[in-house]
Length: 167
Image (cartoon, rainbow, N blue to C red; front, side):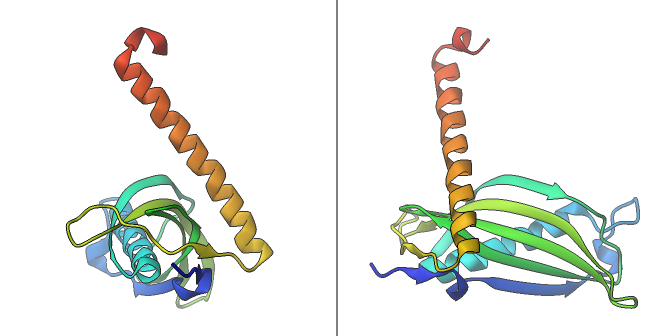
């Protein structure tokens, strides 16, 4: 299976926030931003695998600044790491005030998506071709996050087998 470059699957989505996106506090609802993040990650994973994909986990999602009605939300996603059937996608969200031009980094997330075959089972995906030092750094950091996730899963499984071992 031939590898694919990071840039072959990267995506940028732009959407203006409207009144229906607002929560009772007057800011754009976090769920609206989360859906855009998940959509961007899904597009990146589908472009890389050329398969249907599902979100397996959101490793981390941090909201840094609020988003307001009228802001242009820019969602940028790209692959950080590829496993056998899974892919980690990093997503960055910025909000731009269209009247002033001010841009704010509003959220970041790491998602793991899995490619599926026609029967809905995980299927092998092409390897990732890392070309730049920035891509290599992101790949190394993703591998560290993956190890932490796997270690936590092993700990949780052990705790389910023997609850006394988790005190």
